Image 1 (cartoon, rainbow, N blue to C red):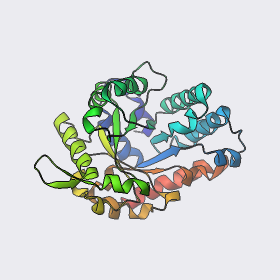
Image 2: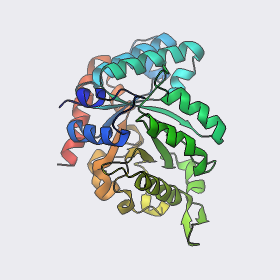
Image 3: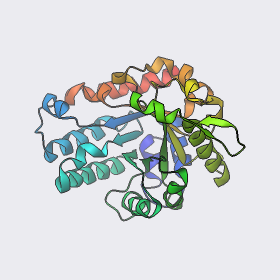
Image 4: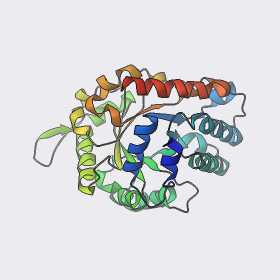
Amino acid sequence: MTAASVAAAVPAGGAGASFGSRLADVLETSGGLCVGIDPHAWLLEEWGLPTSAAGVRELGLRAVEATAGSAGVVKPQVAFFERWGSAGFAALEDVLAAARDAGLIVIGDAKRGDVGSTMDGYAEAWFAPDSPLRVDALTVSPYLGFDSLRSTIDRARQVGAGVFVLAATSNPEARAGQTARVAGPDGTSRTLAAGIVDQVRDDDQAAGETRLGSVGLVLGATVDLASYGIDTAALTGVPVLAPGFGHQGARVSDLTALYGAAARTVLVSTSRGVLASGPDGMAAAVRDAAEEVRSCLA
């Protein structure tokens, strides 16, 4: 079974198999590479594209085409489209539609996080089956309280979608907050990031998802997880979105060393690492990156 046939079995935002189950299928058939679609201004220039909504649309569509058949997951960074206002959102809608048509799992990298009622609006925007912005999963921030995500998580599961919760991110300025120590339910001290890991794992277990949970974690590959109080043994059954490979310095060859037994459920996220190959070289760069991820887990 190809990545396209697996992912297309349940369209983004559609009912049916859980997101975790669909992602598990893609990890088994296509491997763990996640191609980030981040149309930076300098990349548009290198690709010979205009610095405009039309340019980000064209880069996004070409990136989808270059990914299909070699990897099973793409992750458009919403900010680079949003920057162009309504025209940018229209461009994003076209890229998302092309990715769905190509049978790719689509993660909207929007990092939404707000009070519960506002999150309800975001959930409808990104998960409603009739929304042009619908995605298979969305990145969300728990730093207004994990319970503020409750209705978003429930809505995602209702339509077969998922979320990836920020826990230990790859940007160094987040370290002070994410390693701040708080009291856990049992009164023991743990880091804020470790507490989020526990809450995500418990949520997946409570949902009874036996293959792979539909609520995942964002754990940066440039982060020393142990210093954040995170035990990789606690990640079993939880999907992990791991930015930081390639341009930010993490090496795919260190995948198992970084994530231990959880390495097989890690999405190795790279954007500039393949986009910098240009429109003529990106397809080959994606193939090579996907094979490197697979070989590291062989």
